[in-house]
Length: 274
Image (cartoon, rainbow, N blue to C red; front, side):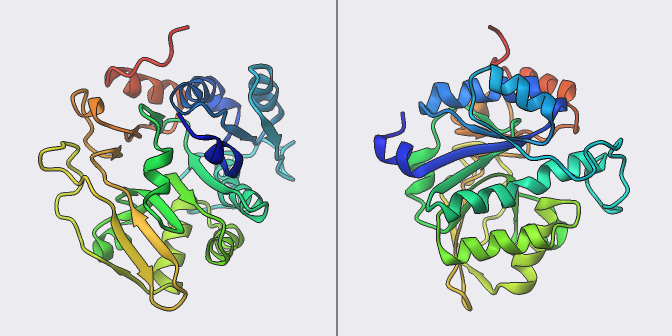
C-alpha cells in the first residue's frame, strides 16, 4: 500500500467517456484495492462523470467544443481511434497530466484496461526517471529505432521542467493518436541515448523475459527516461500464467468495452464480480 508521502505528492488518473464507464469503475476499485489510493477520472462527457462521481471517485469534467455533435471522425483523419470523441478523450491525457505537474505533483496515468494486479507505485518511483513507461510496439518507426516504443497506456511523470515541456508539446501537437504524437516528438525533437536494447522483450516470463528497466537520457535536454520491464508491465503475448507475476497487465484488445472485458476475463483476471 502506498505510503503517506506518495499519497500527498502523487496523483493517479485516467481519461474516460461513457463507452468505458463500467470498465473504468471496476478498474478504479482495483487500483484502490492494491494501492490504497483512489484514482482521479478525467471525464469527456457528462454521462461518465455522473456515473463515476456517484461511485465515489474524484472526477473532473472536460467537454469538447464539439460535444453536442455526433463526434464522428472529422478532424483527425489519421486517428487510430474510431471517432473524434474517442480521440478527444485520449487527447486529455497529457493536458491533464500537465495540470497535475504544474501543481508540483507526480502523476501515474493508466488506461482503464491496464489492470493493476499489484501496486506499482514504489517500483515506478524507484526507477528514478522523469518519465517511466510501459513498453509497446507502436509506432513501428520508433520500435525499429529503439527496439520498443513508449506505450501511453501506462506511464509516470515527475514534475520537472522537461516533463512540463514534453506534456505541452504532446498536447499542442496531438494528431489523433496520443501514442503516435508522444513517440514522434521524442524521436524527432529529442536525442535519446538508451543504455541497451533488449531482444525479444515482448516475452512475459520471468525466466527469459525483460525484468529490469532500460534507462535513456536526452543528450540535449537531460530528460531521463525508463522503459519499464515488460515481464512485469505486460502489453504483448501475456498469458494466465504470466499474470501471476505481472504488476500491470495491459493486454492488446479491440477498442470497445465488451471486447476488452472479454480479453481480461479470458486471462483469469476477475475484477468484475461484486
